Image 1 (cartoon, rainbow, N blue to C red):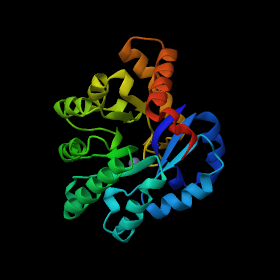
Image 2 (cartoon, rainbow, N blue to C red; image 1 turned 45 degrees about the vertical axis):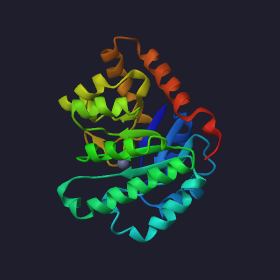
Image 3 (cartoon, rainbow, N blue to C red; image 1 turned 120 degrees about the vertical axis):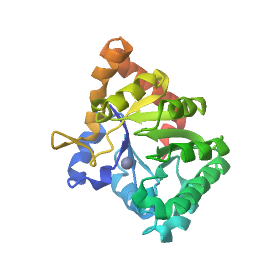
Amino acid sequence: MIDMHCHLDLYPNALDILEKTNQNNIFTLAVTTSPRAWKATTEVFKNYGNIYVSLGMHPEIIESKSNEIDLLMGNIKKTNFIGEVGIDGSSRYSKTFALQKEVFENVLKESEKQKGKIISIHSRKAVKTVLDSIEKYPRCGKAVLHWFSGTQKELERAISLDCWFSVNPKMLKSKKGLSLIKKIPKNRLFPETDGPFVSINNNFLYPWDAISISNELAFLWECYENEVLLQMKQNLEKLIGNLGDSQ
Ligand SMILES: [Zn+2]
């Protein structure tokens, strides 16, 4: 159906699952972790119309990819989709926190200059900083917070900043994840997998598994599952509008 955040290029069997991904999902956002990976992946995935590759720079590896920052900034004008970008506030990345923030803000600034992009954002243990940055660049486009794990207050703030959210099946397995999902407005939510980094019962989640959250959402929203699916489609239309035709 829809997978708003997956690392399709990093599955061990990536090439073997492209066809099925393209057929099963009307939209898959294949986020990348560096501009070089974006370039290469765009080339390989170009014949799959339902798979969109986004230009990324993963905050966890920003130090080793710092020589690609210019490439990142220079390519923003060439794409509608940015991600994975953002900030990771975990202690093991504290050394690069300032650099992460600087690059993230520059990406938002450039996106604003280029009339807005759809941006898939990592905000683990750094929600406040990420939201501060988004607030600073309100015309950066549409910020989609992937695997949001902040507090209820931070969630409220993100909603007031017009953020979108992509939610994966693993979030449904935790009490905190579930309590956040309950508060996300229906018209701001997308399914994601974050595959292949997420598995349930030792099985990778594949892009077509993202929609497995629909069952639980139907329960939370007290509606039928097909109404959930319809809502997701409407959300997608609202997010990508007529951007869908171009990469
Ligand atoms: Zn990711």
